[in-house]
Each structure stands twice: as C-alpha cells, then as structure tokens.
Length: 126
Image 1 (cartoon, rainbow, N blue to C red):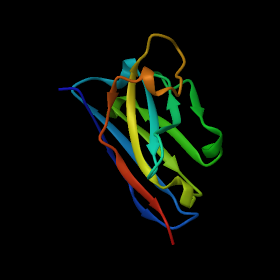
Image 2: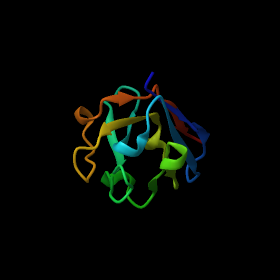
Image 3: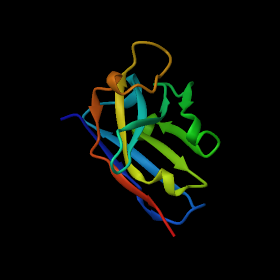
C-alpha cells in the first residue's frame, strides 16, 4: 500500500521553527518529485515548496522564500520541510505529495501530484 505520512507539526510561537517530515511506505521516493502544500482554515489548499526526485531542484512560493527549506534523504525515504521564522499566517494543515518524475524539475502544481498524505497541523500563535 502506497502511503505518505507527515509528522512534526505542532504549536509554535511566532519566530519559532518546526521541521516537518514526510515518510513514504510501500514505494521508494527515488523516482518522485515531492511537494509540500498547506491549507489554512477557510482557504483553498496552496503550494509551498517542491524538490526534484534527485534533490537537484527546489522551488518555493514567494511567501516562504528565505524562511523554509525543503530537503530529502532518499536512503531514509523521507522528505523534510524546515520552517524558520514562522508567522501566524503560516498556520495551516501541511500536506506532502508525490509526483512521478517524468522530467528533471519539480513544479508546485497540485494537479501533478498523485499520492497525498493525511496532513499535519501547524499552528503559529503566541
């Protein structure tokens, strides 16, 4: 059974940090681009970042550039999202998703991603 499981969410004060993990089971992530997406209360799900299958390419939306870093450890079948300088507007459920890598570069576009995790809640509040 192909599965993605996110972890690492929680409650953090503004300016704090969290590291989210996305672990795969039932398949190897080596052949997949991985994206992180988020959905805030009352809003549509939006893209955050993506990393190519070999880790050579990363992309970020403007709102998180310079604060978030995506990385992957294919040996551990896991992708990470390091989130620093968190803001209240980062509060959302964060999802990871996998896109079979037909090309060398990832794209932050939800429709490309076939496998999704259940999400992990991130709350930024004082």
